[in-house]
Amino acid sequence: MAVKNSRAFVLMPFSMKYKEIYDEVYKKACQDNGFDCWRVDEISIPGSITNDIVIGILDSDVVIADLSSKNPNVFYELGISHTLGKNTIMTAQDKDDVPFDIANYRVIFYQQTIAGSKILYESLSKALKELKKIITETSNPVQKVLSERTIFGIKQKVPVLKEIDIGKLSKSMRKMFDEEKIYYMAVSNS
Image (cartoon, rainbow, N blue to C red):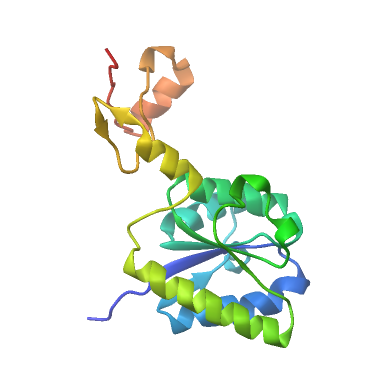
């Protein structure tokens, strides 16, 4: 039986400027460390790109987010990744590409040169090796705060939703819950 590779989803600007970094560094580092690597522009089936991005993040074991050029789409997708508790490796070409809110998390900085690409490859490979050891743990701002919240005095590791008051949902939302067979548990804080 073949061993299934872990999966890495890459968030980055879709510009020819970054194509070589993706092809020659991100993909190679991932493959060399047992990760299947892809990004949304490699999906050719018709449909919503945004849905494909969310699915890519959900289906990945690791997310690599290149923050270079402060691309708003990448930051939106990074927020989704953090909310879902994904292990995320952030990279950037310049410290000014990293906003205050995430500046206290490790970022691999690189220069887009031959020497810079080699350093990025080595740093990314090291990060992927380390993450493989702790693939089920997360460390990002959303999950850190959520894990410190409690229900019934018991700390939760990765709560995504704390409470739903079904009575306050719109009729269409209640209908969606029923049609999609989405199950929920009402939690009382009394």
